[in-house]
Structure formats: structure tokens, C-alpha cells
Figure 1 (tube, rainbow, N blue to C red):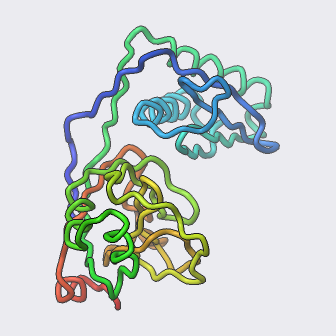
Figure 2 (figure 1 turned 90 degrees about the vertical axis):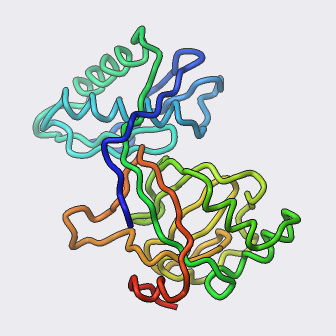
Length: 255
């Protein structure tokens, strides 16, 4: 895996003010939901929301200090867990509401993603990517073209969930976008690279899964013993690089 840091920020401009609302998630956590054009504030995927949520996360952590125990971003929401010994529900909710109002009403309607860019190696082959032929047939192209379309795209890390290190990356070229499997597999191998709709991801550990598998990555996506257990973060960018079976094995991959 190679990493490029200090890259020039990617900017997105909002077409209208981003709205939000706050709900109680547990006895010591709140969930902030963000939305743009949808009147019901249904979850949506966009770089605009990704940038806004990143800014909100940074602002809340820096402004509220030790009262905040953890923040967990998602596609269109941010969960904040706070220390009940230091602050009560009403006070922190009021503070968070004021901070986000300040953020969304900012006269500068430009939000920036300042993440790093990661290049991850992938061994693409039917022996580790059993769904490659079906995706190719559905798209009316060759397996080699499926691989090329997957490799040439640059993906943003929109959120991390489902399992530690499972990064949801978007967006996949619409030619090779595929719905989830009707019947999930009982076990998907660690490192499996897969597609579901217009998202792609790497399975960080063996687990059940219903995504379409197209290859395998030898780079660990979760290592609890590392100083950085998860190598990527929300707002980062990921590119994939096709490698041979020999290179895959040399990098520690397992067939």
C-alpha cells in the first residue's frame, strides 16, 4: 500500500444550505442527521455531506474537548458520545446545535476534503473474484474491461462500518455497478474486494457477505495491534492497482 499525503483539498460547493436535526441515540450519545434536497432528510451519499460531516466532527471535538468521548461519522450522520460526569444531555445538545448552525450558515459555501490518497494492490482473477464473469456478462464487456473500469476510478471513503476496517468507497463506474446478491454467502474471505450497487469495499476479515466479489487485496484493512488499526479514514481517497498472483503472494496474500 502506498500513501500520498498533503494533497490539494477536493472542494464541493453546496447548492442550498444543508439542513440537520438531532436525536437521542442512547443515554450518553446523540445522533446528528444531515440532509440537503430531501424534505424527509433521508440518508444520502454525496461529497458535500461527507465534507460537511468531517468539518462538524472536527469542530465538535475541538470545541467540546474532554466532554466528547467519541464521534462516529456515517454517510449522512454523526454520532457523538459524551461523558455524563462532565456534561448533561441538555447542555451538550444545545452546544452541538449552536456549533452546527454556525457551520451550515457559514457564508463560505465551500467544503473541503483534506484526506490522504491510498493506493491498494488487488489480485483480480476468477479464482478470487467469482463474480467477475457475471458482472462482465451483465455489462456486455470482457472481464479485463471490468477490471480496468474498477482500477481507473478514484474512490472516496464515505464511511466505515459493518465491521472494523470495512470502508465504504464510492462511486463505482455505473457500467459495472451491481446490486447485492439475492442470497449472501456464508463466508467471504479476508481481503475480498467487492462491489454492491455503486460502492466498492474490501472485507477486513472473514465474514458473511452479499457483495459481488471481484478480487483480493493483501493489505490488512484492520490490525488491532497497530498504532493505526484502520489505515484509511472518512474523507480519504483510494485507488486500486492490479497485481499478479505472484505479487499478491509476495505481499502476504492468501489464496
